[in-house]
Length: 145
Image (cartoon, rainbow, N blue to C red; front, side, top):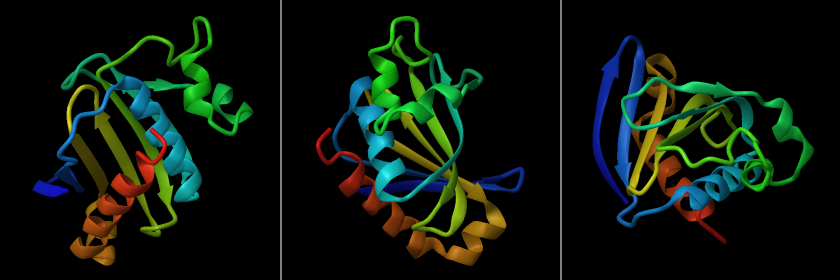
């Protein structure tokens, strides 16, 4: 796990990390299901984008609450919101590990992890805690993926 850089824009801190191995779409869904469970993550928003740089489209959370592995379950739904592969997938909400709001973004067919949090929350938690969270995500997100 390597930190690639950090930037503050419009009051939000963005930190990019390299997992050092590539992941695909099905692994992204498994990753987020694992994090929802292992971080006791309070999900507030799920969004996807066709490709990096294109606008995010919010996916309704209604369909997600009916399964212990809600994102993976959507993959197998005919016509479901996550059935078709997309380039970027993000969850946003409250991380129990960080005790802070965070958006976690994965980019299909890459090794990139992006964490975004309001700058005051980032400063309160500290850079080291965000780095530890990235390691936590790598260790727990891809277990069984």
